[in-house]
Structures are given as C-alpha cells and as structure tokens.
Image (tube, rainbow, N blue to C red; front, top):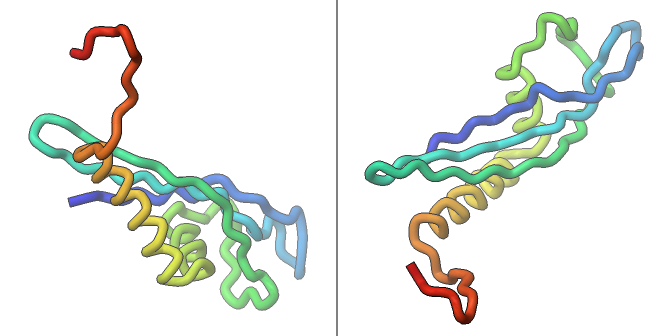
Length: 113
C-alpha cells in the first residue's frame, strides 16, 4: 500500500487584494508516495504548481492561520479529482518500476554484481 504525502506549504500570495492581506493564489506542491516491500522502502515524488481561483473568496483564512491540510484541499479541488488521481498513479507506477524494474543501466567491461 502506498502512502501519499501532499506538501503544499510553499505558496505565492498577493500582498493585498480584495481587502485581504497575504492572499494565496498559487501553490507549489510536492507529492511523495512511499511503500515498504519486505525490508526495503520505496518512494517517488512529483512536483508542480497549481493556480487557485481567488475571484470569489467567501471564507478568507489569514495566512498565519493556514494549515497544510487546508491548502492541500484547495489545491486538490482546483486540480480536480482526475488530475489528483493522475499524479498519484504516476507515483505508483514509478514505485512499481523501482520494485520490478524492466530496464537497468550496465557498463561494458565492468563486472556485474
């Protein structure tokens, strides 16, 4: 089972807009998936950014009260379920290739361990 950790702690914010200070409009996300097979831990990471729609802020949360969980929810909502699933599937596929590689890199003339 793969555990996904969404880190959405780094953001871009407008200093002031719509009467609010430090308004988050862009999230720099890092998603890391990890799993354990036997004694080995495997992981893969995807990174990106997601612009948030701030046209109609109804329940503004001051920046110093924001949590990672809140920003993750905003980010995933802005992405949509299909994109969230695609990111996590990409990570799962990368981990599967670590566990069950289909290609390796070899150097001619070097002993293979």
